[in-house]
Length: 490
Image 1 (cartoon, rainbow, N blue to C red):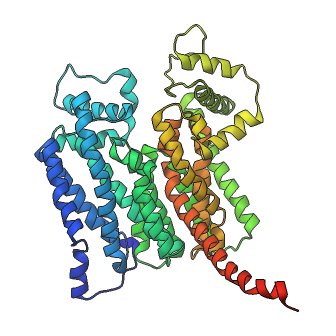
Image 2 (cartoon, rainbow, N blue to C red; image 1 turned 90 degrees about the horizontal axis):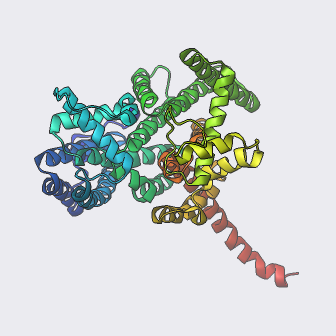
Image 3 (spheres, rainbow, N blue to C red; image 1 turned 180 degrees about the vertical axis):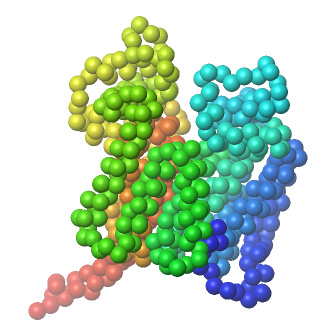
């Protein structure tokens, strides 16, 4: 990751100091108490895993940023790590007493269970088999990552959570570095604090879920694209960075293909923007639409050949799936997964089949099929939409989300240092918003997948809010100075 930094050469004394940037009392306490806590909860494998994640993440956090910011990056990583570790240990212990593996959510339990089953199958335990409802997990690299962890350390369900905790700390460092280069150090510092303490970012990083890994890979891809925006074509690091981008894109294709398509589109637009051909703004926008159409068309053609169905049928399936997701949300369905045998028949007992069958007979409506999903993906959950205590708590965070959303409209007025990358960052956020509007049908999954939008909204929103603050602070004194003159002057 050092290839992404432009750190100058430093003396041996400064280098020795940079190797151990976290030497304060609380930093040492975190680095000592966290492994001991893992040892007390789950034994020696957890202790070894905690040390590897903690010390490896700390070294990597320093290499993700320049030399002058290494101390802050290390402290940021340890702070985010300590906060999540303080949540993981007690919740894992109490849930382990109840279900045996410490899972917090249903998907959390399923991922852990399938990872353990794969280890048993590899050891030749014939009675062990993967249930039909869980076979979709076998196509995900995250499942085999869990299998590898349990193979090396034994069955220790705390370890995947600790890995996500470490990745969450690195995500905060990456967001700091991206925001620092595109806006300013103050915006980057506030962004880093938000990445460390925002509840929606904490909740998914303390469970055995792939969301934090997807976020980490996406931020690495954005950081690589940011480097390529200003890199010299003759720079020796350019090809190394391209290899890193290829690796994270392949990983995203497995974990979440939509994020990989967004990264590929941004790369193509970046190549077009840095080409010798100078285009106007409307031409760049038209080229972006053409590139997006090419990617979507290619995906539809691949699906047509893979399923032997015409493109029109694929579009109908996509529209029908979107309608089904909306119908499930309106009916309060607890699951948005459809099996092949779940036919839209009113005679079937599952609720999703009934609401999907009803949605098929409902005529198309612009407000219900277009406007409502877009608003839902951007503004939900509101307090009146909450159906549980957890959702009500999540709606409280929307006050911060809405303020950042308003501030993001003024982010361009903050004059980003990298205009091309700032446009790409905005395009990345808009694309994720449209995808969420199209595919998410319940609040739980909406909050999980909107994780991709949190760093972008923090960067853009805080930059816009900072511009508004300085604009008001410079205008108010001027009004006060002119007020007496306007009142009693000639």
